[in-house]
Length: 269
Image: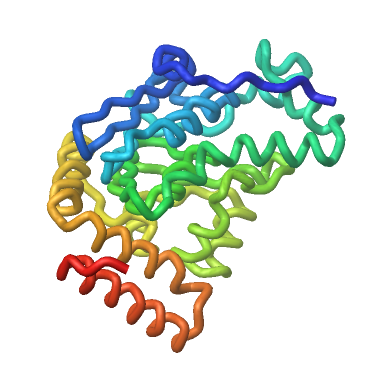
């Protein structure tokens, strides 16, 4: 059995693991802050990201995910593949030797760092520059919106390492670019540069690198200006649209609009 992994609850511990959280009222900024390692991802970073999601103040409406340095995230820390692993962390060899239940639980814990970005009460924006590889690509895909620098380079390299993308990235990628293109991107591990990212819908906007954060904040401003409950209802409608039939979707629209009208009129349930 693999040893239980401690959960980080302290912002200082988060930052030591490469994640910094700053909150200004309804706006929060999450920064990947290990630029010297090109923000390579580790289980400690994933625990920190999951901790941010769990402890995000309820008042926050928009979260900007950004990264220091030349790369958004170069993907997994390759030490995870070594027999020694990362000190204090279970490496892939140790994970492979655990029971089915423990292995599933370990991967589920990793996925928590990626899954909260699409919850309906917040809008999340990734500002992506340089390399966004593997886990880095999936972290960008975890967000609702992506503003990309002109030097962005996406790649899904898990398959070339004998793995699969398992950090929640396969559904948003397929939703954005379609099955055939998603399969090609994942199975070949090729680079997707800024122009193609915009054409495929991976990037909502491409800007010069020096304008990246300003463009992301410019997008955040009207999101913060819109009535919160209307944004929440709209996001929920759109997130669920793919799983509903046409008639189910229009019924969901009616129900959401009824809630909005009654809320605006001050009429309770």
